[in-house]
Structure formats: structure tokens, C-alpha cells
Length: 149
Image 1 (tube, rainbow, N blue to C red):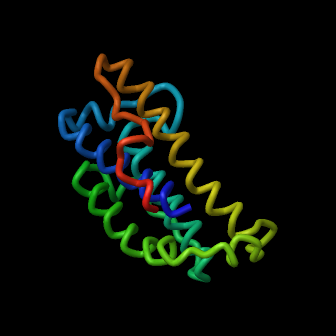
Image 2 (cartoon, rainbow, N blue to C red):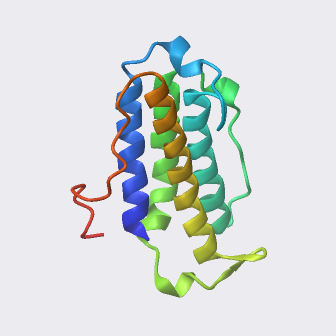
């Protein structure tokens, strides 16, 4: 489980780096599908990760307002601060937690959903990058040094 969160965090950081070569207008440009823009998509994956993981920790659900994160630097800072909140829970994951109930779901279902959710949106970013004539961030799990996780 931890390896896939580390994978998502690595790939997200690579998308931030990729985004540095885009103008602010290009990052905010309305696009077909997904959350409608690169910036909105990046905010969304951070927001959903923190909302679900905080929920598992008993922290009341909270969602960030996209209008507060209209620059790449602000989104990157949000990602890093949210990661500080969720990473201890992720790193302390144990198989004993997977069947614990969370509303109508299990903790394991929620964790897998969070992982799959970000991977889904990373695919959307890849489509948009190709539409822009740019090479997307590699989605390859191999060679990321995550086998230890």
C-alpha cells in the first residue's frame, strides 16, 4: 500500500516540475474532460487524498477552494503541506486496518480508492500533455526505487 502512495507522490512532484515549463495561462486553460484544467486537476488530487485520509483518522472532512490556489507554487505548497498531514498515517499502515469500517466502506477500500483516483487523474494529465505536443511524465512504476516499500 505504502509503495503506491510513494509512487503517486513521486509522479505528482514530476508533474509539478513538468508544469514549470507551462505558462500560467496554459495551466489554467479550460480543457476537455477531467477537472477542466491542469491546475484544477492537481488541486483536486491533493484535496481528495487529504479528505479521505483525514477522514480515516477521524478528522472532519474539509475541501480546499480552488480559487485559493491559482498558481503552480500555491498548489505545490498545498500538496507538500497536505502530504505532511497524511504521510504519517500512510507510513504507519498495517494490514490490521484494512477491514476496519469507515462509514459503508473499509479502510482498505478507501486507501485503494485514493491510490486509483490519483492514477486516473494522472492519465488525464498525460492526455492533455500529448494534446499540447509535450511528452508526459512517465507513469512507469519500474525504476522508481520503490520496491522496498
